[in-house]
Length: 428
Ligand code: ACO
Picture 1: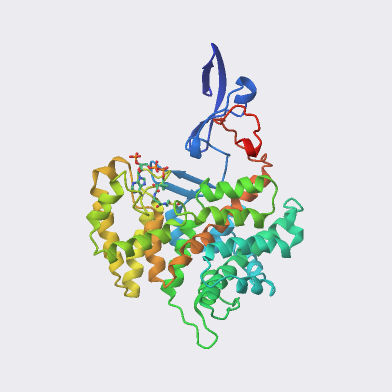
Picture 2 (picture 1 turned 45 degrees about the vertical axis):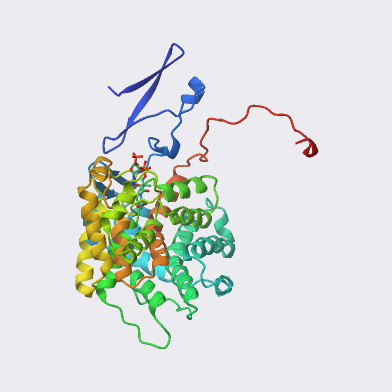
């Protein structure tokens, strides 16, 4: 018999169904709560609230499990390509050879961005943060494709917008970087695969032959896969909630990019390197900075530690830690920041404060170090995360529109003044 949750209010007992997911996770379905009782729930930061049902990604924070469409992240990171994973997330199954070839070739047809967009880049100051540029550019794409403004126009139109976004985001991201260095923009080279093409547009110069170590391409492929989806996190929930108003996909993804920018979310990978640099410049006394992180009077936090849902370990961090060691060895990088990172990790893992609060290194702790070793500039780290997360955002948006979810609109408990009378300005 299925479970029932009971709530007693003012002497009346109300019953609510309990729903169970395919991984046995349970939720009390309170969709009818307000209508039945007049009450709402209060859950600041949505720590206990399931905003939707979803068949895309499963994660168990206690056990450190992450699966995309049922495939463990460990297997995908080791064996798949990012484009294969993108297809899996968006369309539900791993592609066949033909499906993958078609998908790949369709993406390469759309890698160019409209020439007029080059002028937008040039109008930004060289110091503009690339996340601000990227978010604006993605929203600007909607102005070139007016047919995308109606997200429900047709499945074919939806697919075309999806392909355009997947194809153009690396171009826009690389151009945002090129613009910050005032170097010439490099046009995409479609004979390269997705990751190599991005590195080409980032690092190639028209005057030199482009060479890239395959280790770097592989590392990027792995990092993008690890970032590709993470169920209802801050940026994904943003994409879903913006999309729920039937705003177009470009606008929804642009909002997701903005949400990802924050230092408590994707922006943490940049903050990790900046923190390690600060500790290095300060003499490398890790214990001092751990004490600061524990001091409640001090706003400093150890960036790259802690996670809203992983309270045991972050499975992505486990994979990435190994990849980090491999890549640094293969590339022969000997970075003093890495030594500080390792010491920090060791001290924090043994410290009671961090143990009691289940604060472990998260994916951003190591991804920043890898990106640095790959030669990616610090300000571009969160942009890299955005490119990796794009298929997840798209998959979640697509699922939300196909399930015809209602507009997202939380309630609140009002705590302000009840009633005041307007006082003319001269009498205030
Ligand atoms: N350093 C020091 N103390 C910390 C840290 C940290 N990095 N993270 C959490 N804590 C402490 C808090 O002060 C709090 O202590 P208290 O119980 O004594 O008050 C306790 O641990 C719980 O922290 P919350 O902020 O309530 O946890 P929450 O789940 O809301 O936040 C978050 C999770 C935002 C990731 C947090 O751990 C944090 O700020 N980490 C640093 C930023 C970071 O690395 N973000 C990347 C997340 S991964 C991603 O988005 C891809």
